[in-house]
Image (cartoon, rainbow, N blue to C red; front, side, top):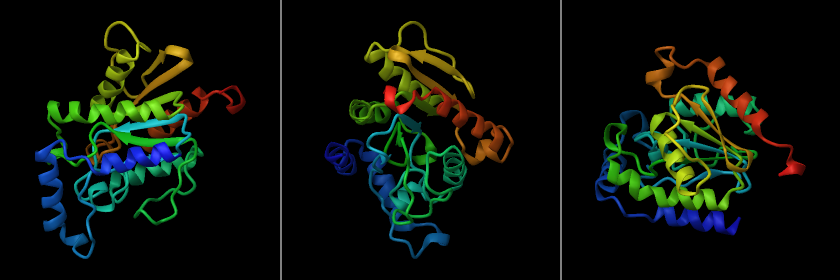
Length: 229
């Protein structure tokens, strides 16, 4: 647990990507009218969840007025509303809502990380920025006893696959991303794909609550019994 805390402190202090650091601070200063009374986080957003998690969820990046405001992954935006509802229903969270860092939310056997820990302009990190953050993902995987990797979106999928290749837990061609895609990897681990619960997907019906619930049902079923971990 101390190592998990140290890693998160190092993530928060990261200054590797000047463009992203400048953007996060600019957003934190200008704010959104609805959140004018908030003190924005405006820094890299650390991992969140159980330091003994066997389910690791990988997103894209903090939202400018979501996690960049609240300082916690998927907290304070519509994507988080969808994600934490599903996590609670599947037994991976103690409550279905996420509003701020001190709202009592806890994850159970689950942790959340991201391809990039800083909010990018237009939600589009540059390839060099993704590469800079890969080291944090590597250390996250080092620390967690993850058995199931759940990638939210194609960029997160590629982030996970690149790390699986590096560890030689996966070989061959790039597995095709799709909602509900399942790839078996080394030592009975599993990679699962899901559409990101962004408004672009949820408002259009590309992703429904039922579809997201099915993904977490599969994640739950893919975890071995705890006494066999």
